[in-house]
Length: 209
Image (cartoon, rainbow, N blue to C red):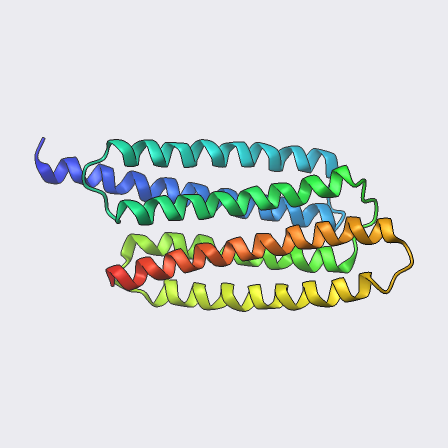
């Protein structure tokens, strides 16, 4: 086997794994939105998100395994590690958000939760687009566009959190305030993690374009 034939499969496997991981982010975000929009049974859908989180962990581990045994990689090893970790963090916080909805026994999902879930889902779609774009890194326009949109969505989430917390402390039920504040902050952190992925993709674009 020549050096070219040896290198190409190694290149492809990282891109394939990243795209699989980004696909799991999209599925998990979609399931989260289904919970808060009452489109599905919360307990059943939460179990699906948990399974997706487990699949994400396995793919992340596989990326690290390939990284440890691959001498020449298509991206800098640190970039590969950062991107894998950042994508995995998004899945973790989607899972954490869904878990809080269940353990706090939330039986009525408000508009704030629905707006957060929509922002997370839209951000996940942009992440998937950006991750696919690293296969043709020389053209950074797609990645740049995805990053701009993710940043815009994250700013919307920041504003949404500030407004929702302000409303919460105007209520008379401290226990409800504590529960909802925890859920809102976890949902907002998921959008922060999406922005972290966008920042990694931006760094990759600058370095390789």
